[in-house]
Length: 90
Image (cartoon, rainbow, N blue to C red):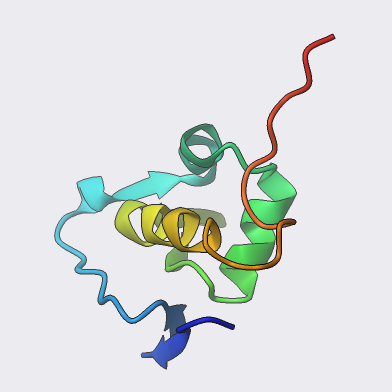
């Protein structure tokens, strides 16, 4: 993968994501809205540690900066399957 490094057990793209406050953490529902990803895909990238997240009380909390970094970086990969899908107009 292009530029991926593992830091503290989490894959990143050569940029350190700073965690500041709880407002930097969003629910999976908010992450789906922000990213445009399907909830199952979002959970998969959380489980594979491509995005920084923590499970609290049975629910995942996603680091907003890590998610935005991931979204930005997958735009430049050769794998065009990555990234949110545009809804088709019917």
